[in-house]
Image 1 (cartoon, rainbow, N blue to C red):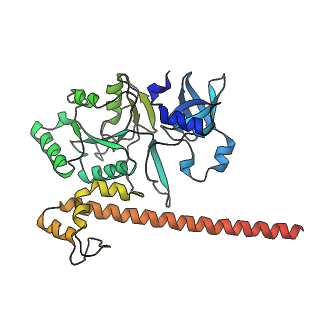
Image 2: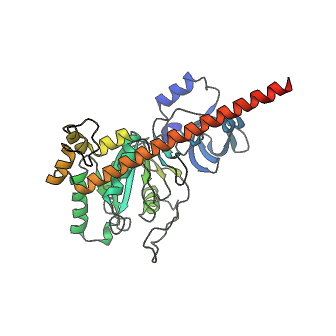
Amino acid sequence: MNLEDLGYNGDLEMSRIENNWNTFAIGRIISEHKERYIVATEKGEREAEITGNMRFSAKCREDFPATGDWVCLTIYDTDFCIIHHILPRQTVISRQAVGQFGDMQIIATNIDYAFLVQAVDRDYNINRLERYLTICYSSKVKPIIVLTKTDLISEPAASEITESIHQRLPQVPVIAISNETYQGYNALKAVIEKGKTYCMMGSSGVGKSTLLNNLSGKSLMKTGTISSSTNKGKHITSHRELVLLDTGGILIDNPGMREVGIIDTTDGLRTTFDSLITISRDCRFNDCTHTTESGCAVLEAVEKGDIDRSAYESYLKMEKEKKHFEASVAERRKKEKTFGKMIKNYKKVINKNKQ
């Protein structure tokens, strides 16, 4: 297997040389399972583990390898290898870790484009699309909206949904497809470039696994149906996996995400809600929260209909989440610092008593 086929490029090679990692082999993480990894190398796929030193020195989840990472390896004859270093990540898509205080979860790394997948028959939600967009823009990843299951609704209804997205999110490409009839697949394949990495983001049951199977021409992922009792997608994909497509593109499937928590996304919010941010420059106060202040240009635009009220409410909700996450991170770091000082003082007392 050629590393360039997996997306390896001159910038990554330069990083390897600058860090004096020339003696190591190079591979890319194609899946992870609780600190056990599958790595694609020029010699084929290998199981891998990180070194004890990497595990000991890791301060947070970001210090561990993730799907999409390029890593430096020692490869053994037994189809096993040891991961020594992670090459600098060019992009990182992440969200708030579910149920973990002030922590983040890496979705995938070294991504060029993200397919934001929603099913038009039941899953379509433009506010959720704005959340995915905010994550993408924060990560410097280019988004492409993919609407699936168009065969389940009428053509006028599908066109209406597409037009509503164009009006609210004019800067984002939209491709409508059917996994059953393959309508729209030519347009989708046309945006997949050789050597570029794509990931899929969306809820369970929107057709991501079927889409991956169809694009690859193989049955790589199990597919399921919508639960009749909850009308929600069943979790079929349980881990992230990187697949090399016949077209030359690289695609990562992700487990369905029912929670899309926003983290440090100042740039992401500004890009997603560009028109709102532009209007906010005319607010009377520089620190305007766009909620109750007099002279707020944003509130005035909402009342006039120049800003969609739903988009305005979506922005406020994500801005609040961002600030809460930042406060949680600050509080966690404060606690860690206090605990560190306590350990340091304890060691001083122990050493003094030994003397």
